[in-house]
Length: 322
Ligand code: PMV
Image 1 (cartoon, protein in one colour):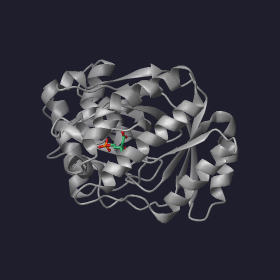
Image 2: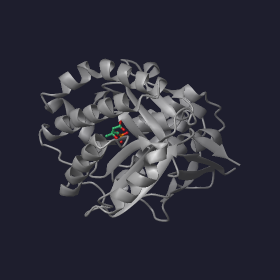
Image 3: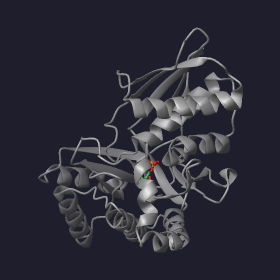
Image 4: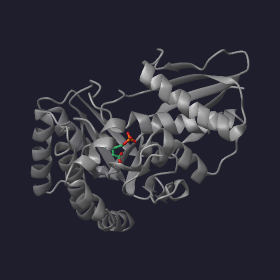
């Protein structure tokens, strides 16, 4: 039986960076994100008793060794939980570039988790799916529930699962993603998380996270864009300060990244409801109130160094497709 699932990537408003346990991907701090409708990964899985090994195809090609091994390890987790003994055929396709700071691993591991667990005969709760997706990729835990999502954390596997704070219709906000590069980043987030504690700033960032989480929850609950803008930019800059002060340092920004940050701040000072955030890559996510999305996207397209602008709205969680 072939089972197909779809998941959106998500953009973190409060970032997760660093693990308290790398093997289980238990995040050092809790995080909050929005699922991005319009961008998606669709993955089909079938367990086939005749197959000698797992067969994986990502965007039409067999993946590089490290990516394939990561998928096989995730299938092994599903096999261990379900008792399914057969190898699997996995076909996955995303409609956006992977590895450039658009959280492709989030949608990839969320879709794989939902498709593979159903194909193996498991019937998991949303919380269990989120925990399982998290072990594949931390941020994937947040692509399982709907809309605005919080990923809690704690010392044990059971503590770290995501749940919806509000559905996608709760607040009309948009993410205008300014792509300044389509190239895959040189240091992926799995390796980046391991470097987090080498920065003297990481402990201060993690200690202050509960305060930022509370302000972000309040901004979402009360649809308070100025508060959201302030807390999201602070949180993003704290994470990049940790990255830049790690050993070795990680600098994901390019000159165009910095130019966009300055523009965003100037536009906000002029009254446009817009704020920036950046994941582990050079591209800039420009969060805005929905009504301003067209204006922001058109201004971004005119900036030198911006190759493309993608506009996304809050999306649903991962689901099985008929
Ligand atoms: O899920 P990972 O291992 O790709 O880590 C995600 C890290 C950031 O995107 C930089 C932050 C986040 O919370 O999504």
